[in-house]
Length: 125
Image (cartoon, rainbow, N blue to C red; front, side, top):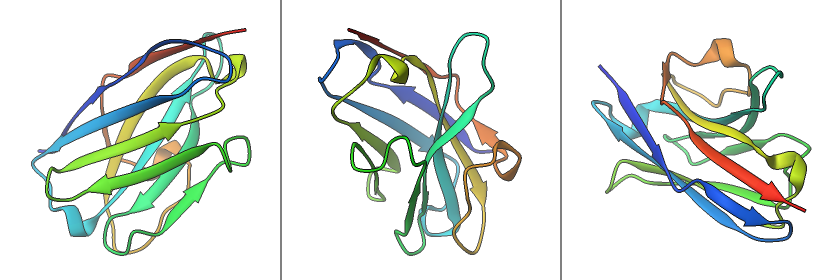
């Protein structure tokens, strides 16, 4: 059973940076697709960035391209999301997700089977 534990959320002013971490347990790093999603109050959960651990290929939502970077450290079984130039509209709960896969997946929530509990990011203007 895959378990995901997020950390690194917090409060930051607009223009600032945060790095989220997702510790993964019970999976093989080379065979999974992993992603970051966010959900603001009253809104649906949306994909932010995804990575295929087998090749390192990445995929980003248009709203975060050039500002966010998804990466992995397979030696630590940890996924990261570096968030720069944060905006107030980035305020949300951020979730890590994973799915066993053989190629890059997108940012639809139905494509992922395992979810963490989330970490809150608040950006003040």
